[in-house]
Length: 210
Image (tube, rainbow, N blue to C red; front, side, top):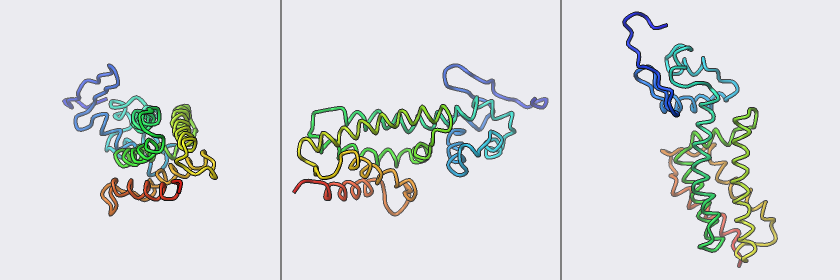
């Protein structure tokens, strides 16, 4: 219970917005939570840990978010929504040859990784240990399936090699992107555009038909 004279903003629970004590909003809490989840693991993080990270009491953090699971779901949705709205859309259109769409999907995946690096890192480390993670992995598999089908289209149209299984090509291509979370930093020596150029260049120089 707040001490006498401690002014506290009313909690709003309509929609997805919750506001509590001045100085923090839900977006700030989410950013800090993602940092902690990535640093010490989601399962090993408690709401008490998050409260200490923010300089709040354990009870006070519930003025900002309803649960740890809510924070995880919001973080995973951030990464998945970005991928679904762009990469999957590229794969689904048929206005360009499959190889051109595959190249665009690969480049866009790099851009999303750079723009949403903490959330994408959390997604790629999810192991399905909870209903929230399992739901996220189901969504991720749907995206992977769309990309694998795009690779198959490129093989069928004759623009990619036929001596490597399309599923393996897809895993190798997007594995290059996904592994970047271990070393890429937006302010590092290699920026997102350079990373996209390098990955697409290496991939298609090695996979294009001669």
